[in-house]
Length: 333
Image (cartoon, rainbow, N blue to C red; front, side, top):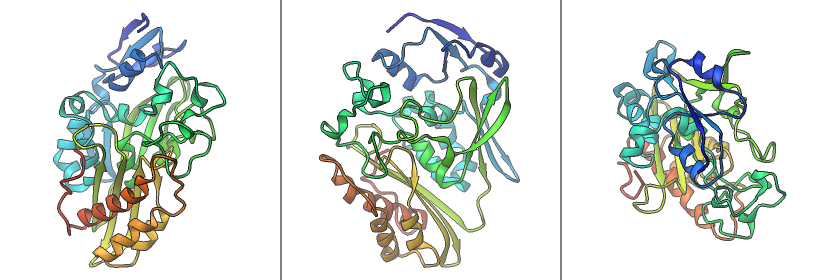
């Protein structure tokens, strides 16, 4: 690891004043320190924002929910209001990593973590994401990579929180000294590598992610998230599903099927949603939605298992959200 200076900040204004000349922000530091250890990032200055109290906490309003970016995954998962009204987010935060990491990692940090492709993370490979014109995953080890929507880079979106927040139609607040505050929907926050292989999101170098905003769910809304991965590995998902169902009696008025670990950015399956909208939630409609979610799938040489895994994950999570199935004991977390 390279040597670096550390700036401790206790206010947003102080942190923004330090955010220049290639400085990197540290919150929980879980992903950042991994990148520094393996040489992916070599910052000369870290800005520690861990002690900015105004960036922590969960606030419920008539319009919905506001969560400070430094609120930990454990705090989000354990909050009674999140658990009851925004279950998909509570599930996603509660199933991430290990209890120790959930007590350290922040929701903002979870959204900003970089891809987990081992070629990108290794100092021995200079790939497309590092400014070269090659992706080693296409002809190499690609069992955890994308099966949909990839172009030049089949890395997958790593954030479980983003899957849940996409299902909830959430947005993030970005703050800078020059431009003040701006709001970006989660669906627009992440950059596909074909659009820019060197950036992961639209946040500018002089901005901080300061909060997350979630609109109040419509009446009759039910939701759930489940993650499937290596057994007892506490690792990132091989397939995960965030499901939101707006129910009108026995019929599903509107559905959102959000997927992680399928493509380079978190995605919604419009085909799966169409298989549920206007219909009762039954094992048959849930199974049809799961199958529809794989429309357009293009597995790589070592990850065709995902084409079978995602329909199961989506089927079981739909029924979990609808209250027709218990949490899957084979799911991770």
